[in-house]
Image 1 (tube, rainbow, N blue to C red):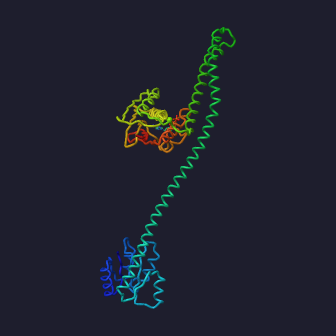
Image 2: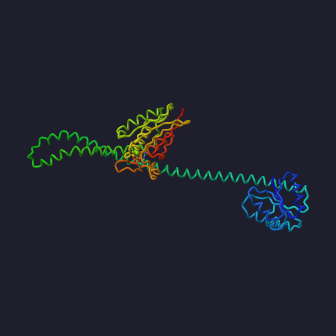
Image 3: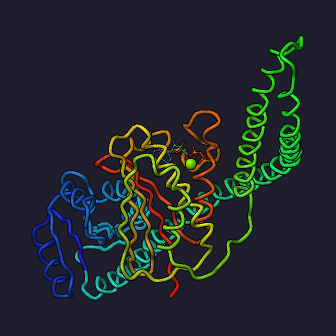
Length: 398
Ligand SMILES: Nc1ncnc2c1ncn2[C@@H]1O[C@H](COP(=O)(O)OP(=O)(O)OP(=O)(O)O)[C@@H](O)[C@H]1O
Ligand SMILES: [Mg+2]
C-alpha cells in the first residue's frame, strides 16, 4: 500500500520510512509541505499520509485542511507532532486529521494505527466503488425511463391516430360505395340511352348541345369511377395503417414473394427500368404473413420507380442475404436518393413529396408497421454511388 511521509527532519523521516518499508508499505518521502500537498493531489496519489505538523511551506494542519476541502479521493492523514497536550490534539482533529502520532513514534503503536488506517481506507474504496456503480445504474435507469416515456407518448399518439383514421376511413367508405355503385348503374343506363341520341334528327333545336352531351358523358362517368377507385385505394391504405391485428404466421419463400411483388408491379416497371436480382442461394424459409411482406415490397418497388422517373438507365436491384439467424432483403435504386427532410420523416404517416393526388404518404409507415409486426427492421440509407437503399431484416426461426 502506498504511503507518504512528510517531515523536514532528516533522521525522523529516514527512521519512519525504513521502519514502514520493512512493514510492507510503498513509502514516498518528502521534506516540505508544498511537495507533500502536490503529491497528494495528483492522480494515483498515496491514500495514507503521515504529515509533520511543523514543516517549511505548508504545515501539516494546512495540508489536511486543504485536502478536506477537495472532493477528490480521500487521504487518511496522521498528524506527526511533538505536541501532546489535549488542546493541540483537538486542533489537529478539528482540522480534519484522522489520527495523530507523537514524536518519536513507537513502532508497535504506528503498526496498530496504520492497521486502522488500512481498514478505513478499504471501506472508503468499497464505498467509492459502490457509489460509482450506483451512479452508473442511476444513469442507465434514467436513460431507460426517458426512452420508455418517448415510446409511450409515441404509442399513445399512434393509437389515437389509428382510431381516428379507422373511423374516418369507415365513414368515407359508405358514401363512396353509393357513388361508385350509382355511377356503374348510370353507365349501364347510358349504354341504352345513347341509342336515343343516335336517332336524334339533325334539325332538332338542341342538336349541337345533345351531341356534345353524348360525347362527354362517357368521360364524365369514367371520371367519377376513377375518382371513387382512388378514394377506395386511399381508404384501404388508411385501414391497413390503422389495423392493429396480428399478421399471419406461416412458412413462406421470400424469393417467391419478391417475384410475386415484381409481377404485381409489372405495369409500373415496364417504363425502362432494368431489374436485377441477386438472390442468396440457400435461403431458409421465413415465417410470417407473405401477403403483407409482398405489400411492403410493392411499396418499395413503386417508390423506387417513382424516384427514378427522371433517371437515365434506371435500375432496380433486389437482393437477399442470410446472416446468422437473420434474413436480409435489400432494394436499391439509382434515383436521386432521399432528401434530408425525407430521410427524417419517411416513416411519418402522410409524409409525401409526391404531387397531390399521386401519393398518400402512407406506404412507408404501413410497411414499417408490417415489418415491426414480423419482429424485423426496415431501414433506409442513401447509397454513396447515388440512389436509395432499403434494407429489411427478418428473423429466421429454424
Ligand atoms: N426510393 C426512394 N427514393 C427517393 N425518395 C423516396 C424513396 N422512397 C420513398 N421516398 C420518399 O419518401 C416519401 C414517403 O414515401 P411513402 O411510400 O411513405 O409515400 P408516397 O410514396 O409518397 O405515397 P404512397 O406510397 O402512399 O402512395 C416519398 O414521397 C418520397 O419523398
Ligand atoms: Mg409509396
